[in-house]
Length: 393
Image (cartoon, rainbow, N blue to C red; front, side, top):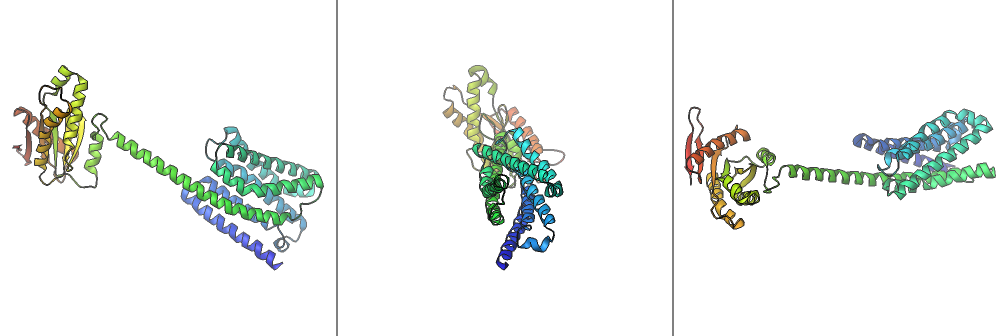
């Protein structure tokens, strides 16, 4: 007797630990199936309270014991439906099958509410047993279809509930066909419930790993999409969005900025076609990105912006600009003339935004164009009433 009480007590302690753990995870992760697993565990614990020897201390009236057992059994089966409906992966069963699973809850609840009548009237007891058999069949069919569809959750729960289902079916068969209770029914159920807790816990761990992997894949795809939206598809360097991201990054504020524009680019498109013009733009992007202290971006057309991080940022900008004709000549050898570029440079002030720095560099670029092109001019003084332009190189 003492050993049996110790066994039941140990099982109830495991139920409480499982319910508390699953409940805490449910609150953190906001997964509904964890809430239903908590409900299932607690109802199973209630059912075990109707097992001997502990039931003698809780229920002095045999009829009340029978009613409690009916209520716990019906609720434990009713919860299986919504648990499966929320636990199984989307797409492993049809909409109507999911609705049937949800329908198990109200049917089981009605049976639980009718427990006093079922315990008193033989006909109601027979209807109850037939309904329970139908619900078990429905649950087994749902799990079988889900397993065939590749559901990992269904595979775990099939193992978790397998022995409980077999014991339940054997008990119904023994009662309806043989007319006698199933021998060792409570002991078999207790073993089945222990297996259910162990395998369900393993299933939860597996499901959380799958959720974590899906989350990581989604974040990875999001990062790839974000990066793709920040890249100029023609040249492979950053576009305006990527330039903005780089300017605002915590990796360090650039010392200077240059706006670079290909000289007389229109004649390339007019005389050799846009395909050749695109090859020139790709070559210009490669030339501007050759220095590790330079971050190049294409704003549009033949206009580029580079962020300059080196100590001698003006020299780096000028070196990149002078590198353009050689790179274009190597990559687009059919052009009969060199492709040069003009650049406007500006230092980055502590309170500068990207737009304000580009605006100043644009003014320097216009000055470089007016001065004859193929050169760099920098804004070197930003006092309120005048700005000093200085040729670089």
